[in-house]
Amino acid sequence: MRKKLFLIFPIVLILILSISMLFACSTENTERTTTKTVMSGPIDSTEDSTFNITSISVLDSLDPIKFGKYPQTINSSIAVSQDKKSNGYYLGVDKNYYALKKGSYYKVEDIVWDAFRLESGDILLVSQKILYSVRYDNFHDYFDDQMPIIDEKGFIFSEEESAKIKDTKVSYEYSLALRANVTTKMFFLTMNEIQSIYPSASKVLKAGTDYAKINLEVSDYGYSTWWIAPSKGKNYYVSLTGTFSNKSNTTIQTINGDSKIQYTYRGFVPAMIISNN
Image 1 (tube, one colour):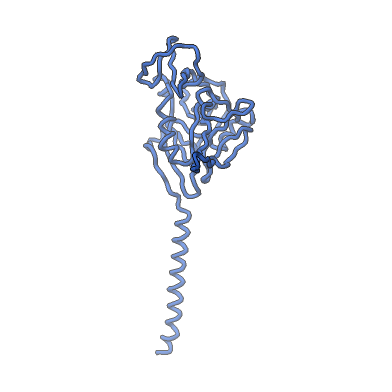
Image 2: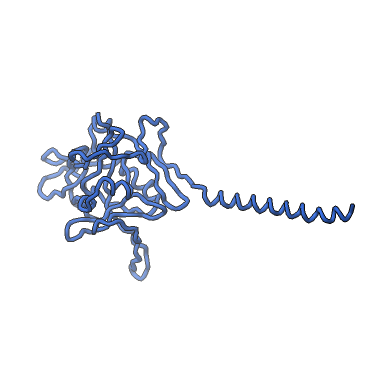
């Protein structure tokens, strides 16, 4: 009997160790593949009023349209009141609004958008120009600083226009293990979306408005770089030659003997979806 127990005990011990190792491996793999989710902003649960960006399917291109207003052209001749209005702008003697930035006034003008009919019947709008410049290094910059600007500040839409703008669910990959989901009105286009709606490189190249070019590098042909949606932890943008790049967006600058990180500003080309009614 003792001999049998002596033989059985090692076998049982080996089985226990094997099961423990399998469980540990399973747990480890689960932890590695779990996607962390960051929620920023209210997520609308009513599917009929919210458009999911992943379901975009462009059928054909439409004629460009004017929709909403935003500061664009620098003003050097029109007299502007010093009284700021409730919308944050100043009124000129020509009855147009002007934005004040770094000592200059910029006229609030109609935004011209490239328009694309979607399979859903809605319309995808993509600004023909870079409307402003943003520093965008990680998801905190977008959620904390840029999303409020994109959705709330600066843009002027009529009541009729506002009623057409659809809330859109977007999902950005800020790293291999970090995906951020948010509902927003304006968003960054992905690389695949840009390639599908702009088969020609000439359309991918974008020039900035006067208001946007304050912080932007401008090529000899008048184009500037602009951000697109991040992918797998890399911040992508359209380069000055119309290609996609994810090269470093920071440089080290020495000021008075101290080394500091200098963040790159690139353009933002708003994209949004409106209902076709």
